[in-house]
Length: 179
Image (cartoon, rainbow, N blue to C red; front, top):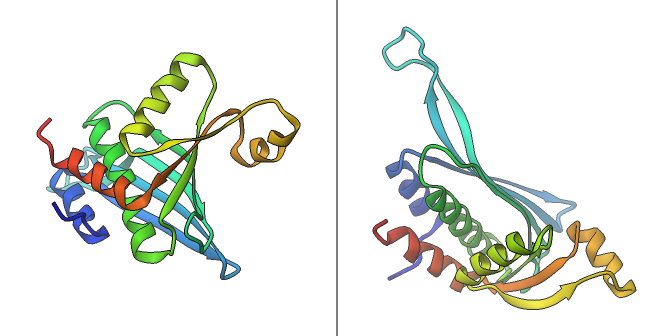
C-alpha cells in the first residue's frame, strides 16, 4: 500500500467530516515551526439553511524542524475526547506530520519525548509511540548532562526516535483498517 501525500490525507479527513490543516513557518530561513490541527465543523444553530459553522479543535501537534536528516522534533501532541474517533484524529495528525516532513524537508527521522509525568501515563505513551515506529533513544533524568535537553523538551522522560517513512506507512495502514 503506497503512503499518501498531504492532499490525499486532507481528502481522507474530509471523508470523516474533519478538517486537517498545517501551519508552517520558516524562521530565519533555517528552522521550520509546525502546527498540525484537526477540527470538526459545528453548526451554531443559525436560522440560515446551512448556518454558519464554527470549528472545534479535536487535536493538534506542535514541533519544529532543522534542515537535516534527523532534524524533526515533535513537541506537543493533544487529542481531545468527545465526538468522533480520537484514534482517527491522532492518526491523521501523525500521518500529516510525516507526509509534510517527506514533502517539504530533508528530515527522515523524528525525535520526541515520552514525558514521565506519572508511571502509568508514561507506559501508555511509550506503547503508543512504539506502535508508530518510535524506538527508545535515551532516558532524560536528573543528571547534570540532562539539564539542557530537559529544558529543550520541557521535562524528564524517554527520548524516542522514529523513521518518518515508517511512521507515515504505519499511521496510514491504521487509518485504512476498519475500526
